[in-house]
Amino acid sequence: MSWFKELWQNSREKGQYYELEAQKYLVTQGLTPIERNYYCPFGELDVIMKEGDTLVFIEVKFRKNNARGGANYALSPQKQARLKRSIYHYLAAKNLTNQALRIDYVAITGEASPNINWLKNVF
Image (cartoon, rainbow, N blue to C red; front, side):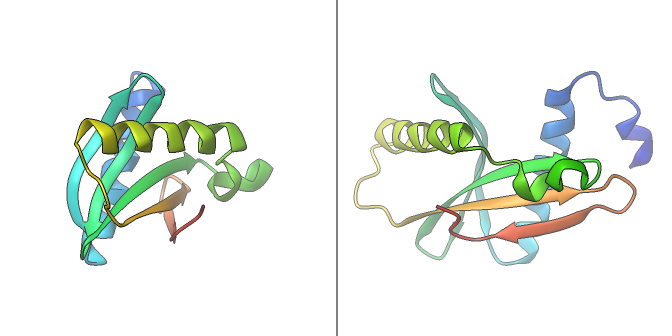
């Protein structure tokens, strides 16, 4: 897929590519896709999946290398706060009450052969 990477026009396209890669990886781990790129006034939810009866909200971050901590350290406190508000918005908009949920983080580092690090229940 390296030819595709050369065609990226902006960071949104790059983000969507790696969100799809993360989703494909999580499907191999037994999760079921529900929705991608849910937008609301507070931000965006990258990937929403289910594992059993649990709704799983997945934040995906990509970094080319491990400089400054790489993708593993790219989830700032500000992003965490926006993510929480976006999840509350999603649950209210979908009228989901008493729903078991979890917030996971997928850190992808490297372009040639990306390393995928899936962290469950990050906060």
